[in-house]
Amino acid sequence: MGRGRVEMKRIENKINRQVTFSKRRAGLLKKAHEISILCDAEVSLIVFSHKGKLFEYSSESCMEKVLERYERYSYAEKQLKAPDSHVNAQTNWSV
Image: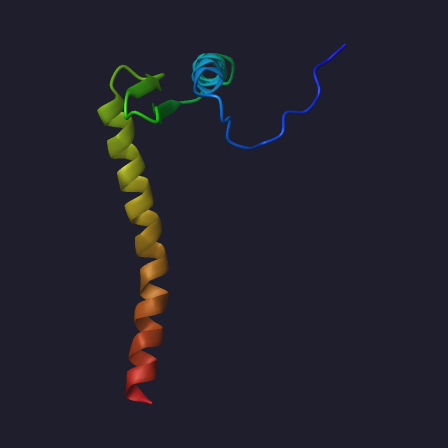
């Protein structure tokens, strides 16, 4: 028999919240590792606890390489969107 649904709201009890965070963090890291192996995907995961502690996983040897790739991709995507807004701005100024 499966578990029931968990109501998505903040856990008020500090100890229960920390235990849940630890268990779910471990599960999330495991799933990230599994998808990288099973699907030959490049996966990176960054989690900060409420106290600011860093937890990370990267299927590549270096998280920095993945972050650089992400920055290049997001920059290129912004550049594809930017020319349209630039053209529209010029059109509005000339009208």
